[in-house]
Length: 375
Image 1 (cartoon, helix red, strand yellow):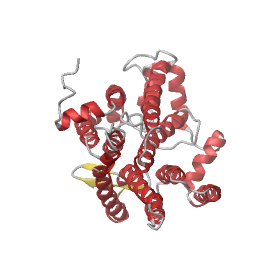
Image 2 (cartoon, helix red, strand yellow):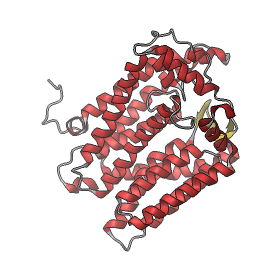
Image 3 (spheres, one colour):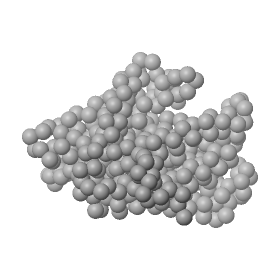
Image 4 (cartoon, helix red, strand yellow):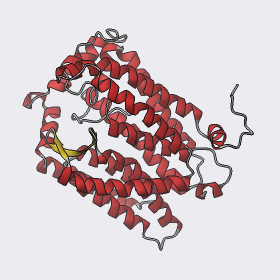
C-alpha cells in the first residue's frame, strides 16, 4: 500500500499519482544494471591507463545520484515549465557548442569536450533533448497559427546545430538529431512531397559525409569489408558475446574489458554479453523497449500536439541511442562511439539523458484538463 495518500496535494503527492511509476521503476532498474556493469568493466580500463582501479567507479557513482535527482526533479515540471527549461538549455548549449572549437579539448582527433573543474563536458549531448522540446514547441505553434513561422525557426535551429556539430566533427550526433528532427517534422504534418525531398537531402548529406570526412569513409569500408582496415574493437566485441553464451562467464570473469579501450563506455554492452550472458542482454533490451513503447502508447490518446511531438522526440532519442550502441557492438552497423543510456560511463551523457527522461516523464504525466498543458 502506498505511503502517499491520493488526497495528498503536495508537489510530491501530485507527482506520485500522476507520473508513470512503471517507467520510473524500469529506468531505476536500468541504472542499477549500469552500476553493476561499471563495477565489472571499468577497473580493468582504469588499470590499463595507469590510474586507480576504482577511478571511473567513483566518478560514475558521484554523478549517478545527481542524474537521478535531475530526472525526478524535471519530471515534476509542467509542460510550460519544460518548454522554458528546454529554451534556456538550448540557448546555453548553442553558446557552448560555439565555444568548443575555441576552448575545447581534443580527444581521439575530435574537439567535442570542454574541461570544467576536472570534468569534461560534451555540449552536443545536451543539444538532443533540448532541441527536441524547442522544435516541438515551434512546430506545434506553427500548426496552431499558420501565420507564425514556427517551422522556419525549427529549420533554422536544426541547420545551426548541424553546422556546429560538423565543425567538431561529430557526424554520429548529427545523424541522431537529424532523425529526431525529421520525425518531429513528419508528426507536425510535413507534406509528403517534402518527405521525399528531405529523404533525398539526407541521402545526399550521408554521401557528402562519406566523401568529406575520412573517418566516416573508413568506418563504412571496414563495415562492408572487414579486411580493408582495423576491426580490432568490433572483433573483440563479437568474441565477448561468443564467450558469454546464454548465461555468461560470471561477474568479473570476462576478458574483453582488458583489451577494449572503451569497454566501460562505447562497448559496455559487450561486457554485459560476456560476463552476464545473452539472457542478461535480452533483459536490457526488454527494459529499453518497455520504456520507449510504453511512452509511445501513452501518447496515442494525447490531445496536445506539443506534448505529442516533444515526448515522441525524447523517447526516440533514447531508443535510437540504445539501438546504435547495441548494433555497433554486434557489428550490425558501422562502429559508432555511442553510450548506452543510463548504463555506460560518461557524465555528460548521463545528465543529458536524465534531462531527456525527466522531460518525457513530465510531458506524459496524467493531466486533468487540456488547460494544464499550459500551466
